Amino acid sequence: MARRVRLTCMTVFVICAAAGAAAAEFDHVRSDEPAIRALLRRGYQRSATFRGLVDAIDAHPGIVYVARMRRLSRHMDGALLHVVAGSPDVAVLRAVIRTNLAGDYAIGVLAHELQHVLEVLHSGPPASAQAMETMFDDLEGGVTDGKFETDAARAMAADVLRELRQERRP
Image 1 (cartoon, rainbow, N blue to C red):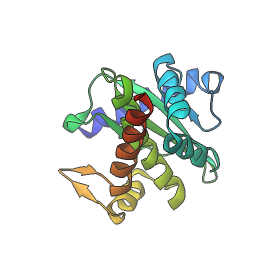
Image 2: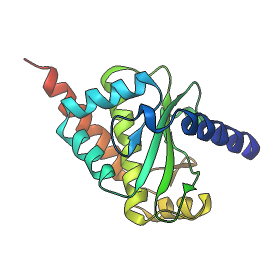
Image 3: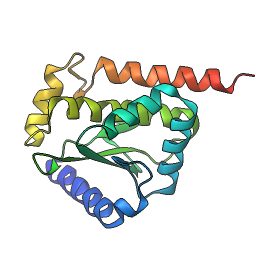
Image 4: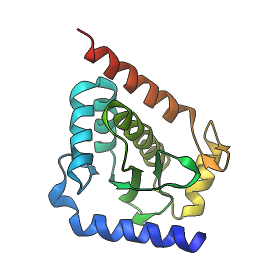
C-alpha cells in the first residue's frame, strides 16, 4: 500500500513538473489541467472567501499543483498529498480532487484542500511526509478514520459553498 501511494505521488509530481508553470494562471496555485484551472477561475470570480484563500496562498513562499485523480483512498473527494518537494524556502505541494466532481461542489472540495495548503504554509514547509502528518495531528481536528482533517478546512468548504449558492440566487 505504501509503495502504491509513493508511486502515485511520484506520478503526480512528474506530470505536474512537466506541465508546470506555463499553465499557471495564479502565482502559487497551479494546474496543467484545463478543468482544474476553470474551477479555480470560477471559484475566484464567484466567492470572496475562495478569492481570499487563493490570495493568501499567493502571498506565501510555496506552490501547490492541483490535479485530478480517478480514485482516492478512503472514499475521499480530495486530498493534500503528504509529499514534500521544493526547498526549505519554497515548498512544493500536491493536491488532488476526484475526476468526477463538477460545479460548485468541486469548487468547495478545492477550497477545502487549498485550506490545508494554507495550514501547511502557515506552519512552515515540513521537511518530510512524517513532519506533515505530525503538523496535521497537532491541528484542531486531528485524525478521523485514518484521514488527517481540520475544522478550518471543513469550515472553508462550507463558507465557499454558501457563497456560491447565494451568488446563484437572483
